[in-house]
Length: 99
Image (cartoon, rainbow, N blue to C red; front, side, top):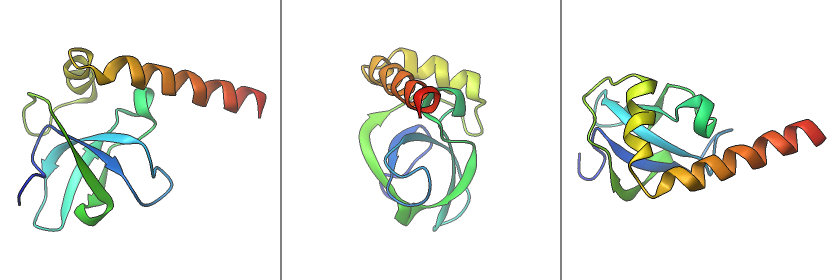
């Protein structure tokens, strides 16, 4: 499978959530994985995604396979990405309210 593994932070490059960060929580087969944002933090809901639509980042979280959104959020808090994710969330909320 390579660098796509449970806990790997990725950027989505296709679909309505393109450009947003997500975390791999389960490997389904050679072509598909289950990812989550979590939705309340990044806007990516838990879903099955083709690995061709993901670009892996060098960040890997220490989570178990099938981890819940609360576990993923807790693991993200210990990374340097967390403040950026919060800032992006605030931008999306402001755009939604003013838009």
